[in-house]
Image (cartoon, rainbow, N blue to C red):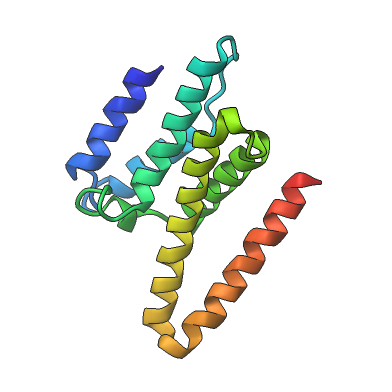
Amino acid sequence: KLAALEAISCFISSGVITEAGRGRQAVSEIIDAVVKCKFIQTDFAGDEMVQLYLVHTLLQLVTPREAGACARDCLSDGDYAAILDFCLQTMLSTGGVKRALMLYQEAERTVLAIARHLVALQSQQEGEARGEQTLLRLLDYFVSTVRALAA
């Protein structure tokens, strides 16, 4: 299970995935495969490691220093939504339980990386004064999403 995720991680960090060619399609397919990954849980520690690596793979796609050349530039709005949904579901499923704390924190880091990126993009487009308003709207979206998922 982990070997395939490690291979994908190498592709992301090496900078092979760029906007040129089929980069957008590759990124969308990676995200689709990760968020739809299903497996029968048999060993808690091993299964948690797989879940942690799934979230880490998504974090690599949204973090500039880990995204290689431009993997993050290949993300569409739908990709961001799928990553957010997956990470918020993961956070809710762990509930911050101590034994799954690493998984919770990795999902949280991914959500925060997306929030920072989207706020930075919005600030560049609208100017610094509107950046704070954008952050508040984004936080409101996260809160409403978490509430909807918890219901």
